[in-house]
Length: 135
Image (cartoon, rainbow, N blue to C red; front, side):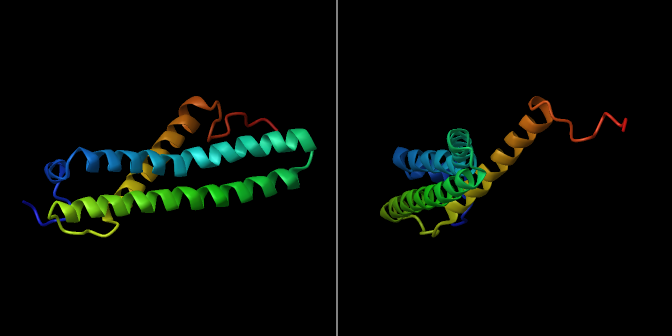
């Protein structure tokens, strides 16, 4: 049994299917945090602006919605992390604090950055380098 925080997949499997499920849900929730929440509130703001013609109202709705949504998702992720920690302790593993949640958040942020970069450079139709130099 490894005492290192990065014991690998073998240590994760020792914790059981429920621990793997919790980590999977944390990964999904953290992707929702980085991708889903901003996209949702951009869409809602566009609908508000379309209905009211007010950019200020759209921005206010989006900012308020993003803050509330982030607070809810972070609360959910913290709760899942606490459940994962309790599973580790119940199985006789070392309590790593919120280490697993931190790893999941960093990994999902990296995935979100790679996904956004791929979309922007390959699929969005935008060119990061101005190709039309005529003035």
